[in-house]
Length: 96
Image (cartoon, rainbow, N blue to C red; front, side, top):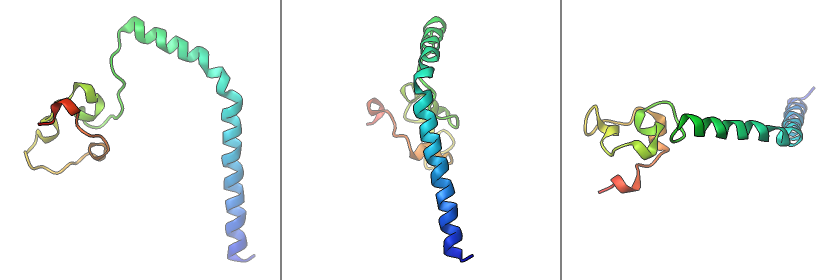
């Protein structure tokens, strides 16, 4: 079997799996609503705050509760050592 045929067979298998996953989501999309209602009830009973977007640094966990200097707590010109620091901008109200 030629290498190009092997590539296209693998591509077809992967595409079939992708389409099957989309069909599965479409079939089960209506069944998640009761769980969302239960989650909203739990959030209101426990008084939870913001959504934790990332788990790495404290200034990327809750963007609304961060300050402008928390990213530079080790050194003022320290390089960013968490990847999410480059994905998330600082809050607008904390910019000079």
